[in-house]
Length: 129
Image (cartoon, rainbow, N blue to C red; front, side, top):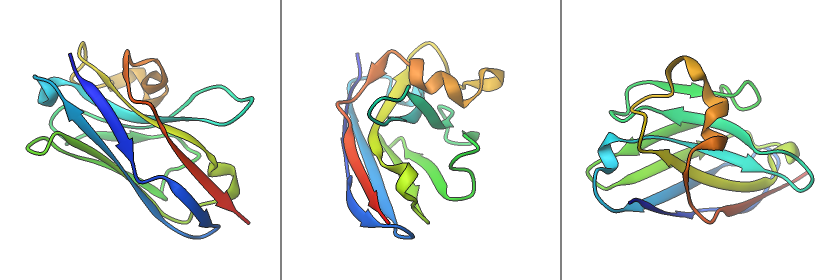
């Protein structure tokens, strides 16, 4: 069982940056693929970034590619999302997620992050123009 707690959200102006963190507790953290998804009011969940269990392979949604960077520190049981050049359309609740069945999302793509069974409570990101 893995529990996830996100932090680092907040309000920022367009063009600004935020760094989200996700602290995991529980065993076998380093065996899980992980990722971030977001959900804005009235919209579906969007998987935006994934990372394999070793932290080697990453994938991104086109909407954030080149602006966001996902990373993990297995020693600290932590997952991160560095968000740069933020836009108002990035406003959403951001969730970290983990899948104990997968070491990597592989060909499934980043969209599956929105379906990962282990999720945190979310942290709000608001970007003003």
